[in-house]
Length: 619
Image 1 (cartoon, rainbow, N blue to C red):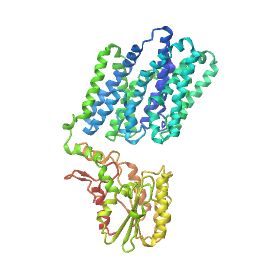
Image 2: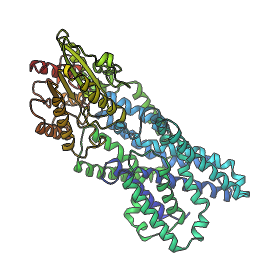
Image 3: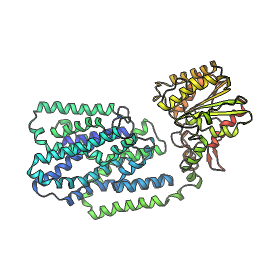
Image 4: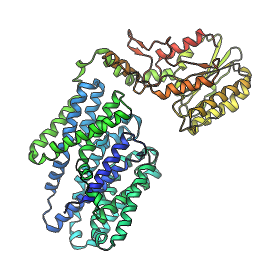
């Protein structure tokens, strides 16, 4: 096959938009379609290799597998070995263990199925998965293993009855695509992960590349240059629109995936060579696209691990990732032909073995202090405390309001009502154990997904529950409710709840306070925005214990919103807890931080807040 500059161009485009998507560059929210473009390219190239081999009667499955191994494994092994070495010195033991797990499954080309059962590609938690991007390599490798076997079974049809072969090929492609449509539309939403990660649901994208090869004579010879130019131009525009208009909220893959897939298909099938394709920079980026794809994500995750963010950091990471990609391409990819297959296999096996050791042992434990190691694992062991603290399943995050246990009035005592999300729920245990039960009756309803406001917006179930409490329960019992406390992580839901700005949200908070007071509620308090950290707070303490000072790690959005709330909510109604100097952030004796994740308080932290409220005698 003559050198295809159009494929080099598509590779450069695909890796460029994937990198910009992962680095959160504006207007590249749909950059994940770059992987779909790669799939089409792979399908075209693999189909051409196999079917040309059939035509010339020299195709060997063994040789095919060896060539794929030599192409994919050396650079991947090099990257994973470097990641293990770097994280050995930089990551806490619990995180190195997780990196070892990711490396093990990535080395076996099974990471897509590991992530299928353990995470979601677009989850916030996946941002810390240093080898998340290897899922697509696993899908491609599974394609490389199964695809030639499938085509070998159809070899006689291909050589003797091309129409039957094409019909079967098109039928399998359609079947794979229909799997996506069926799973996305007729099964629970959790099954959409199967479509994203599973080889069977992605095969159709690669087989579209195969269709481009099967019908190359038609597209190259039966369509005039004018129409080729029009179609290719339109296809590039479609890819551009997809990059800008698609985002993480769309089910993917889905029917919409046809747009970038078909657009890539036409660029390849029409086989036009434009001057811009031959640009040396574009072609070199196309050449290093595999190595750039391998390297861009790990260094981004490592930077995030230490909360290095900002425009300057992003620019630096792009430059560093390109430098590492160039080194990988020049010294590993291009030199791989000089390395024997045996040595490649031994190298890959060694990395898998090292990762397996890391899964069961903690080889870097002695590099960190015991206290820092304990803190780095704090969040993982807090679940049982959290259920008790939040009153989960009783008054927190329940499918229906529990009036009997959670909203039961006592006219002989002062009735205190706590409403909000999990940032109200975090105070549940502290209120229950610290309020004098002979004087106070504590009521609560906390639910994740919306604001505790009269004009509740947000997740349908959660907002419906709050509307019922405000419009019915409080209205009917306002004469017996003495205190209402509203608490929320006010930074959590503004955009999803329909607020374009902080000012709109703050006005709704103020309107709720005014309305409750107008209804005759004696005291209404808003617990203000608490600190929100860019990494889990126990790790902040751990970094400080390790001497990694110099960063506050506080999310600036929480600072701004707290200030906005203080400006409008009257001081007699607003309880400012942000970086309160009366709150101890870490109990060094018992190794307990005041937060267990990036914004939720531990019992230790919540107790201190409730103690402050009681000392103010606001109840």
